Image (cartoon, rainbow over all chains, first blue to last red):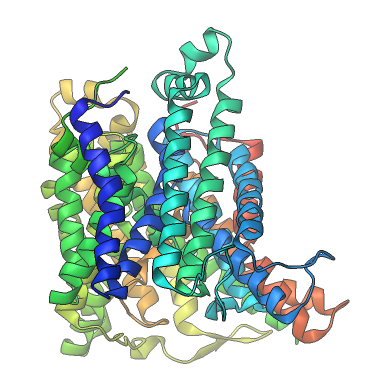
Length: 325
Length: 305
């Protein structure tokens, strides 16, 4: 699935545009625009995570919001404990992003390992419903567990810190998110070109043939699923810091739907597909949300048209059909 | 006293389970016959409740409202099938998920535009108000009627599928679509009828439950997800599985919420026990689902072998 020259150009345009527009906003003193782009970068990152499972591995997880939400809770809980000076499980809490990110990734990775190991016993429609159901399970747990806010969520009073940056300034936070997004995209590209990625894509196309040549699909799928959950969890930690709020709504089932929408709008399995999809979704919300309170109706209509008539997403329209390797 | 409470909770669980069955039956039929995953099934539940509430308020008669709600949900189902769903049968599940997710957005916002953003209230019909004495306890008559209603519909659905020509076609459709099309059955019309039937059942459930809860946008999705759990447990495509799964989920969920906080209270502080108990109770049915999956990955009553 190598990119065509045209898709390379579109990708480069997206990567540079993601830096230039917020830079203009910084110059024009438009912090709201910078925050919008931060949301695009974070949702794009969550999408890149899901794209590993869904785009490369063909695993339609309808419960990826759970990793997004859990990542957010890790950031929120760490921040709260660091704020109060209370240790977590005997360990000192930290409000350093460089500590919080690995913890968020480990926690969501462990969760993905458990959910994945159970869900990957099934395929197709069962897999979709089961991932959804497990995500709901964690969601209801978060809502009814009173220790960390329950239904009200968990506010983050002071954003977690990053060395050399002032995370309370929109531009600094944006740079951090942009950097993480670019690193994740690089990881995705390396992964896709690796032997692991080749096996994963082969399993998506035909698991029986892959096991016939001696590769066990379950392990590869599970590893991809865990990695996918970890990246989405990292995005969740960043989102909680952006909103200064860890919310149970981040793991509601509609969020899982939105993550899939982001990938499909952009183009499944494409490197920059989730970034384009996140930009479209946020753009749509800002543009139509300003005109009518019923903008979701129009989002539904557009989504329906894309699914029925424009398979391959927006990058598919702009950059041409993908060459299937 | 405790025994009376227990009986009340068991009945609540049965009632909840039977209403879940009405939702799950349509969902599992549509998957069994057409191979389609329909997220918008919860929206049909919502449509049934809204139309029932409005029609009952306008006519002053709950039963007219119920009939209108069912008819509206069935009609909406038929329309959706003809305009959108029909194009999705040959697509993969991902496309089906997305297209029906889009339908949820459209139907939820559409309902808000038509009926306004505020919840509607639907009154229990006068003959079913009050309570009945069951020896141990007084129980609301309406909830008891829901149990009877659910059982009657389940029997009717069984008769429809086991005893009528339409039922034979539905079962044949589950086994071999191409063959019954080759035998001259109008498969497109059959699909529309099955979809409308499932939609009507969902609309009925929405209208019936609407009288004990508030009727609002978004009321369908939590029930939809529970219905997913039900049919995953029962085996996708199996009506019998949907019945068993629905009763299991209904009773276990209700009893868990009732019993777990009390169990924890025996060895914990009362305030903490209610929190922990409630949190764990909300996870119970998903644990049940995981257990079923580990033991029987295709559900309790798998459709094909």
